[in-house]
Length: 440
Image (cartoon, rainbow, N blue to C red):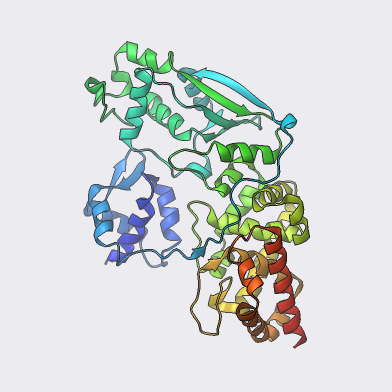
């Protein structure tokens, strides 16, 4: 028997996105699923009720599905269980050397761009953007704009590797062109000016319109070339990240730092150890889980005092991703295992209150706190599990004392957590908590 709660999990996963690939929807849903529950049975029920429909290779909410969510909103609302305390913005505060910036302007016709896609020289399915798909009305209006000679915005590309271009801004437009002109996944609909073309796929267009799209339309690509500093890449793509579904800072970092680090974060975010320690509450769709892990790894690799050199969390995390990409396979394995060991120690101390603010034993449990996750994961690493087990009650007592008496500590995990003074305060305070507990 499929319950309304199970249906709600599927519909919620689709709610904030025009469409999702089946496999990705399954991946999102199963993180919230008990083993005995059947994802396929629940999805089948959604189809039977007309709540979900197919759009080519994608699944999306139907109008009935949207109405269902609105009608059941109060009963099945999802708690946001990750506290966003603010790191001071997504832009690095220290400038990069402009002389080292290497950018190339490259105009291509639509035909040339599509040929690069067919040759796998342009990646249309990067992991960080795979869930973002325009609906067919928006795609149709883009095609119409090209036919009536409305210029398209520029495309921004990470071309710092020789293998293929990574599209950081403009993926929706390129995907639309490929779907319409090559895959012919949809027919035009909802056109404002060329209404006679409604219902037509690319091969059904008059020849002059095909020429207008493929040959006459010039696309402008701004390519960041090899040799561009990582921080420069991050800053530029953060500033041009202005689309309807803007990338999160971690999605941009992920796009620009492909390698062992991105694979490590992907693996760790799905690990039983991480999901258990965080009770599975950290959003995976926009990579909040990977950013949380990266913060802890960054402070594991670098003493908090080195944070002053970077000046902000964004620069610090970009630096950490480059560090991890340069590690050996064995070093990465050791880093991963140390992380699992450390979050296990924290879980042993605090149980369901792990990485959360609270002020009394048995008190209200606040959302999971990024700053506490990073600082506890790092500061427990020097203590073995048996000693942690012996002293866990004393650690909790000292932590609650700090939460109730040390206003600066509470501020350091609550607001402007990305300043050096906040970082320094919480690391010193947490270290002091452990020292007091072990000396009690």
